[in-house]
Image 1 (cartoon, protein in one colour):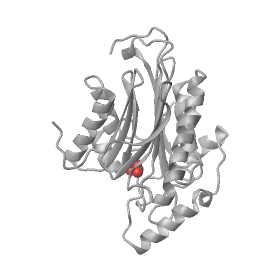
Image 2: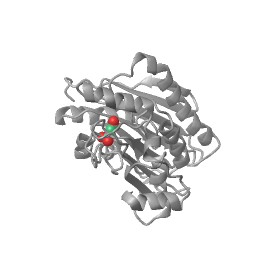
Image 3: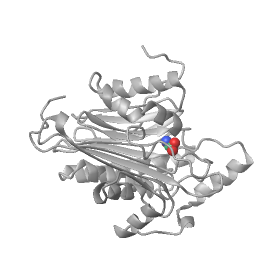
Length: 318
Ligand code: ASP
């Protein structure tokens, strides 16, 4: 933990596209392309020596702009047919030679956003441009305007796909619509960042806020690592899932840390997925839903898309 942050760290980036039902067959190629485009956008920056925060922002905005994911344009709708999005971002910064335990920590989040296409950019503005860390309501809209984020009509964020799914869910029993997005990055200076963005749970009550904008629940970063979560927000908040995952890095490699916190979710009850990167750029990902897609970048393997390991709900943690 007291290891000194090194310059010239190999950068790394991992993104997820939400835990939930396996994507419909005809949407799988598009989702795969979307995740690879997101990780490529962040990887290009990291290769040029950019900050982990810029890589996370680039990856998450790419997915927010893709209607196949439940974030930004394409977000699922509330029970009364509206878009209400949450997003959060966190960074652990290191000055060269600084002990990992002394990193500088920054965070920002936004809730119930309905007129900004990229809530992750607004979460970042809360972090960088205000003394606060969580904002919503008309004040968040004023901030968006002040930092030059375009406000759109509420209806402009409703994608045809999201509207069709909302209509179908009113006829049939609602299927849990996942597709939240998140990214975790380590840059070549050793800085760590995590960000998560979501339209929330399909058919949620207007006004409901989940885990995504809550530090420690939907996202987290510290000197040891960073994480982003997806799944049933209420269960994720109760478990403080991302903080719990990063805390596990003191004892376990990233992969085991991810698997252990999802095994804990199995005991507590609740569908969830998590991605974690540690301070060396090792990744972990796990979920207990039907599926969770991830894409990764590291200088050795390049860009890679896969399904994250599933921790079946019947399996007991050792
Ligand atoms: N965690 C999100 C929420 O509860 C939803 C998701 O990840 O699918 O708002």
